[in-house]
Image (cartoon, rainbow, N blue to C red; front, side, top):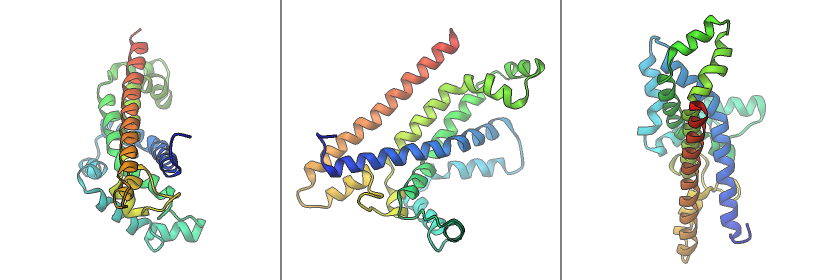
Length: 230
């Protein structure tokens, strides 16, 4: 990226890395949670639904602090990860990916769930009567029908991950070359004398990346819908 400064290039690289891992890591779980909420009735369903969507209404700083308490070096999960596997996630890019995934997860689940609820169950029942098992029915009938929703949820989660600030700075701080993503770099530049011009450039880059993600989501959803309708 010759037209970008090293700080801008590093921030973009980290943001894309964190966002891609956040989406890739949460997509299988998002599919499972969406299917469970859309297709099953069980005790505590309302509670699970509330927990999944809690990051939408909580201040991101609260989410980041909760992650720090749980996954920090002295936290119950963080200590186990370090003692058993030598893995540290707090104050690393991996922790930034986890924070972004938690914040964006409700958007993904909600989009996929709405698509699942719109599927004609008779199509799945027809596939079962023809000898398809549950997994085969899901991958050959259900998944193609909900693919526009899956794509939309994935790209929305990616765009939300790109813009994540509060949970990230609380959980992993703003470490140059490790956790300083686009929003954190922009914030840092606003605190530095003479950094306004660079901050404005990063602001424009953030808007372009987020808008491009939304356009790609719309384009992919329309293409998949057109193929399913043909």
